[in-house]
Amino acid sequence: MADTSRAGGYSRPDGYSRLSVLLHWLAAISVIALFFTHEGERGSAQYAFHLSGGALAGILLLWRVAHRVRHGLAERPAQAALLNAASSIVLWGFLATIVAVVLSGYFLPWSLGRPLDVFGWFSIPSPMSFHRGTHEFMEEVHDVSGHLFIPLLALHLLGTAKHALIDKDGVARRMFASVAGGR
Image (cartoon, rainbow, N blue to C red):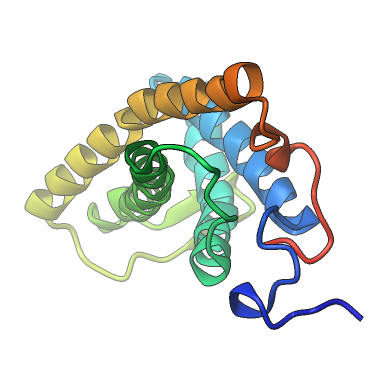
């Protein structure tokens, strides 16, 4: 039987579970698709995908954030403390921007007093009435936090490349190969 006394009950704090790896890649694909559809013209398929797809993906994305907060990150690699701090800032920055983008996205139609329509399949009624100030604030939060993904992604990819090509320490493989008992 595996020793689960370490790292909050995980026998392998050096890697991620199959669920964590799956959530990572589903979130990455969702975020990229939603980013590239955010400029669609009202009424276009691109616009409909961004709104409705974003509403559905938001559930997955918020679940991913909750899963990561609950289970934490894998062990830090042996590298300078400054690099580990930068890595933490980037990773937690991703999670914070996901929460901001999703919640502000839900509140965009609601702050207009409209339901959140999901591909015409169903709609979630607005919990509030029209409020222009709230709507404008949510638009700004959605736009700024969505665009914060670009520098965070660049830093994330640079860190991944460093671990894969320079350090060759196995850290980059964590999101390609799950480990039993991982976070």
